Length: 70
Image (cartoon, rainbow, N blue to C red; front, side, top):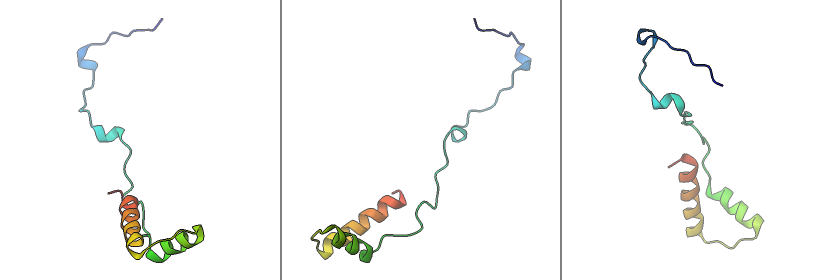
C-alpha cells in the first residue's frame, strides 16, 4: 500500500513546465568532415560497383545532407 502525505497548498512549489529540460540536446557539430567524391569513388571501386560521375555527385550530396542532419 502506498503512503500518502497531505500538505497545505502554501507548501507546494509551482514551476513552469519547460519541455527542453526533458529533451536531449542535439549535437550542433555532429559531423565535421564531409564526404568527398574521391572517397566515394574508392568505396565504389573496392565494392566492385559501376558508377557514373552524376551518381557520385548525387551520392555525395545525399550523404552530406544526411550527416548534417537536414
